[in-house]
Length: 236
Image (cartoon, rainbow, N blue to C red):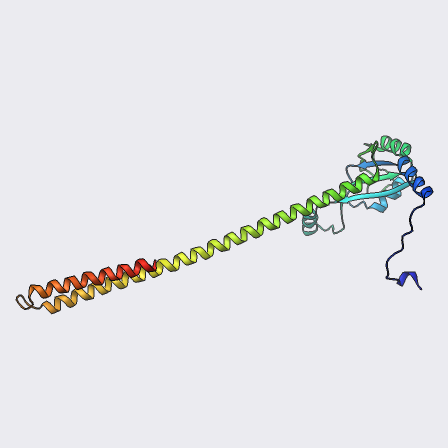
């Protein structure tokens, strides 16, 4: 079976006590250097190549720039490659790591004439009693914090959107109620005017309609007005 085309689970053999002890000894002997600034455009392979001139290098990790900053840089500049802001380098021997940090800190990177990073300055520091597993734990912790912060921002955005839509719907309902109330008020006024005109028409010239008839008409008009008010109160 071709191992390159095998898609099954990888078989990991357990470490023997001797291999585990050797690994622990190698970890205790290793040293880590922290670089606070990575020159623009420099990649992990280039950092490994430069540092390998001074001693055996183990693992190299460079932190990429913030996603928002990278987006703005790609949008407004012609540089599309990833940029790195800081990094950690593991040397197999912590004595070499300490001496490299003391020798290269605040010194030009150098190289051949015309090299891109010839005049850039190294800013690095040796981290005593710092091991690589501490870095992985720190990176995982920071990633978890970023994820939690992103979830919180998304939940706040959803809550603000729900409140906004709720306020818009409430304003719409209040506008509809106000329009209905105004329309009902106009209808009441028109009905009263028509009723008054009808009463005046029925009264005719002086002496035509008895006072009792006028009183009944006025009482009927008052009852109609009260009924309309009760209807409006029950609606609104």
